[in-house]
Amino acid sequence: MKIFEGMHKYIWIEFGVWFFILCIAVAGIKINYYNKQKELVTYQIFMPDVDGLIAGSPVKFMGVQIGYVDKVKIVANDVYLKLVITEKGMEIPKGSVATVEFSGLGGSKSLEIYPPNDMSLATNKLIVVQNPKRLHDSLGLLNDMFDKIGSITSRLSFFAKETNGADLSSGIHTVGIENNIKVLNKWIAEFNYKKEHKGAGKNEQRESQSN
Image 1: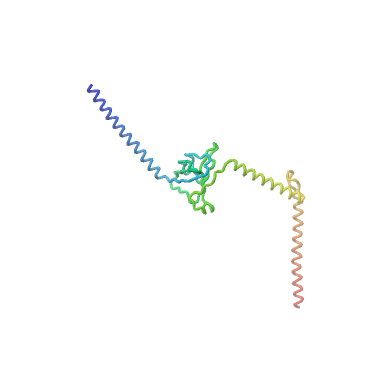
Image 2: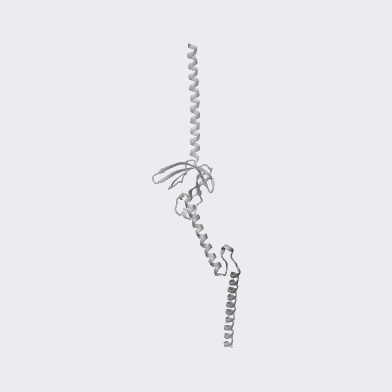
C-alpha cells in the first residue's frame, strides 16, 4: 500500500510538472502572437455596403494582395471594417480609393485599393470609400453602350446615304465620298486662286497710283 501511495505522489508530481511546462508553452505562443499582431499595420474604415465581403477576404492594392479583412461589423447605418496589412513596409497612401470587387470565378470578393486621384485627395481623407460595383450596374452600362453604338451606326448610315453611299448592311461605297471630297478640294483651290489674284490686282493698282 505504501508503494502504491508513493507511486501516486510521483504521478501527481509529474503531472504538475508537465502542466506547468504546457502553461509556459501556451503563454509563450500567446505572447509571440500578440507581438506579431502588434507589429502589423491596421486600418479602420466604414463602408455603406460591403456586398458580401467577409472576415478573411483579401485586401489588394493595385491588384497585389497586401493583407486581409480582420473584422466586419455593422455599426448604425454603416459597416465597420478592420484591415490588417501583412506586407512589410507597406503603407496605404493618403487619398487612396477603396471599393469591393470580384476576386475570383467563384464569386469571392476582395477589398480593392487604388492610388489616390485629384478628387480623392481633395476630400482630405486617408481612404476614400466607393460603393461596390454590382452586376446589374454593369448590365446597365452595357445597355447604354449598345444604345450609343446603335446611335452611331444610324448616323453613319445616314452619312453614307447623304454622300451617295449604300446601306451599312451591304458595306459603304466610298465613290460618292471621294467625288464630294474632290469637288470640295476644287472649290478650295479656286477660292485660294481668286484670293491670291485679287491681292495681286490690289498691289498692281497701288503701284500704278504711286507712279
